[in-house]
Image 1 (tube, rainbow, N blue to C red):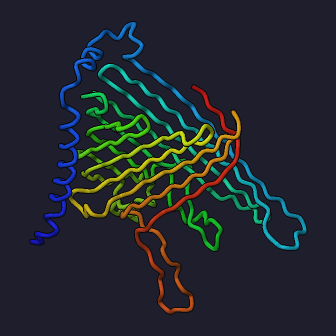
Image 2 (image 1 turned 120 degrees about the vertical axis):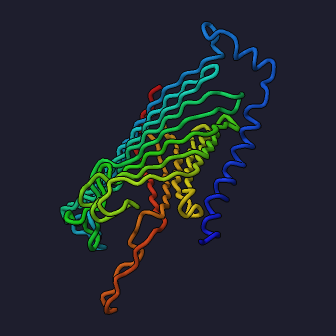
Image 3 (image 1 turned 90 degrees about the vertical axis):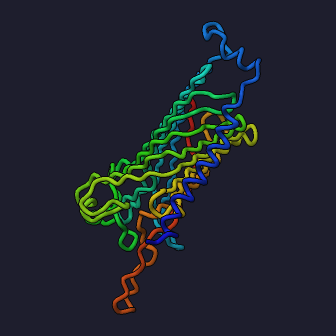
Length: 328
């Protein structure tokens, strides 16, 4: 028996349990008498005891390049990205409930080649319900779901091949259910520590399932993992017209390569021009050891060279100017 391999998940579990236990000890320490008195006061008529907020953000960005007999060369193109973000936040005397919905879809059209490329595609829903143990800590259950809307295709010489589908709606789909501590060290920062987490990956397309993609075994439609989960969130008003938002998700499978941590990191810097116009700079980084990428194309000059396929870092960067609407 490989004792080193068997020790890895135990060590990972012990580390996360130690962190959670330390945070738990801080969270369940007795409340100050003034805070305990406030929490036991009636909700009705006490504006300080209940907080509710709802916010909707709509962003539409468009760009166009039109060339005609342009000596320097180039291609005409037009692109459109639409994003919808919704936030609900309820903070009661003892219970809190936060929900987020995010949707994004973008297309790039190259009329000279009559090609349409997908540049962005995401559906994400996350909700968490917490029981407050003290002013800045809650025992929280979290559920999150992420997938895409439209099919994705492999590119051949920069052109999508409709015969090579690489992803679809719910292929993959990711579901995370977690129980842990939700801490708010500051008014702009959240830290969620969950030593008890179930992560499920779904591939509900027959052809993709048959080939065994996204870590799901060939012929299967789902894969389930148990591990530890950490989510960090930050939303900071840098200046009056500049906002920075960050989210970092980390997941470690206790029973299979716990040192290979899955990473999802999203960063958005928004520069507000006026009430309806803004510039957005976004960066998304993903690492999932179960997702195989083409790291190197086959070299036609080398006989028998099949290229290189394996896990790698996925990066997406967006710089856009467009219409921005906010409702609350």
